[in-house]
Amino acid sequence: MSDISDALHMAGQLVLHRDADLIEIVALSLHVSLSAVAIACLVGLPLGALLAITRFPGRGAVLTLVNALMGLPPVVVGLIVYLHLSRAGPLGFLGLLYTPTAMIIAQTILITPIVAALSRQVLEDLHAEYADQFRSFALSRRQTMQALIWDARYSLLTVALAGFGRAVAEVGAVMIVGGNIDHLTRVMTTAIALETSRGDLALAMALGMVLMALALGVNAAVHGVRLTAARQAHA
Amino acid sequence: MTDPDSITQQSGMALRVRDLAFRTGALTLLDGIDLSLQPTGITVVMGPNGAGKSLLLRLVHGLAAPTKGEISWGGALLSPMLTRRQSLVFQKPVLLRRSVAANVDFILRARGRRDRRARDAALARVGLSAEAARPARRLSGGQQQRLALARALVTGPDVLLMDEPTASLDPASVLMIERIVTDTAAQGTKILFVTHDIGQARRLADDVVFLQSGRLAEYSPAARFFETPRSEAAQAYLAGRLRV
Image (cartoon, rainbow over all chains, first blue to last red; front, top):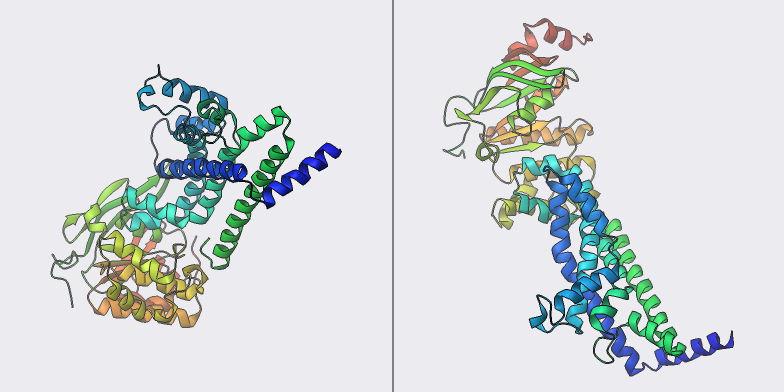
């Protein structure tokens, strides 16, 4: 019990004194996960919108596939990205293995299906409301997709949040393709795993506290934005 | 000011419908509709619930495809290019989750125009200039319908289709919308107005299309329709006798 309270005390000290190692790890974690979320949204939102407004043979199978990909195991994604980026792999010449870029790629692959599948549902519901009006406006497919994404922006923030939650808490893929190299590819989750195995519970606990605070902070911010939007009747 | 290229004025005929039918499964919702409307003025489409009024509007706007028959505007068969020169106002306005001004800007941009002056003029025309910055969905029902009307008019359509636009509005809002409709018609825009409010039809109509059970029961100039309706269905409807 005293181990835990000691660890908590030391963790508090690290956070309060803005320990350099801690800051570096948190900053890299945010860089990797936010980049992955941004790229996943760039790909996933238009894909979700396209699936929401189009009807084609085999659409049901495509939706099932996209939904299934939401549950991709991170270690499997890590392994596949590793095989592609390793020196013998097809993209080995890029020299990306064990870099933050490799971690961003792995996380993007993990969360793009989440963004696409969840946004498809949100946008399909909105399209049911707008469809006749948009057809009357004679909008192109692209104009329809853009309008839907813009009008659902507050709901889509929650979708992006789900992606961010998955990315920032993920350990398997970034461990495999990043290698958990100190001052280069060490992020919060891989550092927690490492420090716990080494018995340095203070740093692990401090990182855990930051991770929890980040999750809470981002959730609170998105909730606040949605409440404001609802008050303004834009949501 | 009227547009010389207007589809309603390229020939003497605004809308020509020949042997129009619409079926879904075993149900026949419209059948044997033959109609030639004048290129200007307000045509009111009347009939009891389920007569096919809204469906007729959707068909002539290209929102639904007929099972049989053909629709032409100004002598040309209905096409996406022609439907872009029409505007439809729905019974329940579908407003975007944006400000009043942004709702009007949206359709202008969709047509490749960024024209604040046109937007401001459209909002002024429907009396919503002071509400431009408000969220559209915070407007009252009457204001929302006027915004839908501003959005429909800002592109300068040749034809304005209105599907019971005042069905759930208070008398003051109804009057405002009727005023805008008559002004718009006076400027040369052809209007097809669906209603089952007989008083409103009397106030607005230049001619009346009366549908009954998916069939055209009567098409007459308004004065004749209200004074001496020829069809039994219209006589019963105007006399307030229910027909099933």
